[in-house]
Length: 172
Length: 282
Image (cartoon, rainbow over all chains, first blue to last red; front, side, top):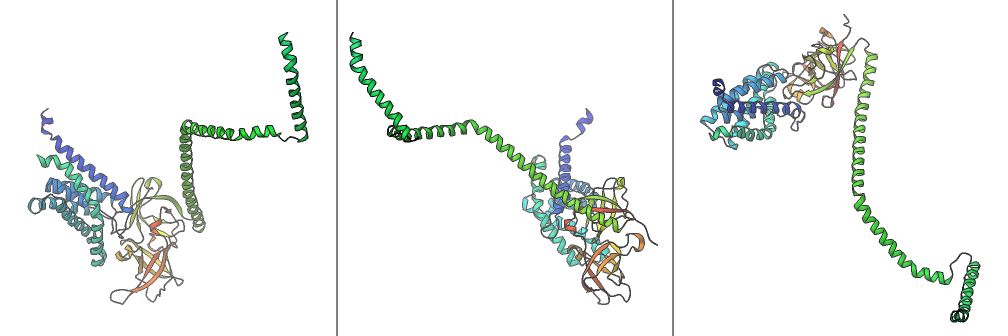
């Protein structure tokens, strides 16, 4: 009974919901969005979801769920080992931090944070190609920009879903 | 007595008229050979519009009846026909898929005859890597089916697709030949000049790759066919990589390289064949 009292069921519920969101988005990203490339690039909206979690839950949760999502992305992606784990953790933490000191939790603030997060993640993906294969930085930046732009529309649902999950906590 | 008198007075007259009438009808019918007499014709003419109206009314009522009472049957029949159409469409789709697979296997048979030493494992492409900085996909076969790391992957025409770079029990990741990490020993054109196919980021985005590190004195031309050399044992020799579509110079202008259009169309690929085993010629 004492142990039961120590468990914060609301927190566990929220954590499970965020985990479900990450799993669903990863599935969509890998199976559907990887087949659609109208701008010549594929969308990768996962960083936006991490930014949203960071925005609503703070840097700690943003970082933790960044690690989780990064691990899952690294496992499903070929050629990366810890790239996503590190970059998403940093992104989630930064989103929480920026929300504390610089921006509010409104939609447009989120979209700016998400756009920055998407671009940062794309640049992190491009870095090894630049370092190890000497690819043209301009071509890489162009790809990173297009990837961020194409991912941005898919970032919109993340804001509303995370706001709904964090809603009760924010009211409290 | 009154009855007898009445019968005699009017009965004979009536009988006479009746007899005349009957005889007249009989005689008239016999002469006109099946055609109605004027009386019959007149009666019929009078009766016709009434009959038509009655028939129209009955037909209308029958149609109402049919609509009301046969509606359910028609709906059921419609649903049944829709189901039949869906089934036929599905069969047509299955047929197309089976025909395409049959064609692929037919081509593979030709390839088998050409490379008798190859052992193939057919695999479906499950998903493509979502990264824009790599070109890779996952297939439905893994170590349980005898697939090994480094195995070459080809199309049914023997065109090189890539190499197994990650392996699970029932899945594997194939890095395609246009990926930036790919290195394949190659022979170019009729002269058989040697070179190395090395992925490049900008070309990868356009679905192309390049052949570079050409042997000294070798010349390459647009349209030259590029094949695997088999050097190093990573890939079997003689697999088609593609065709040189352009000759370019490196930034310094000292060395040239050829841009390759791969023989396999990666964007339409759905099934591939893993070469599990082949004879290494020393």
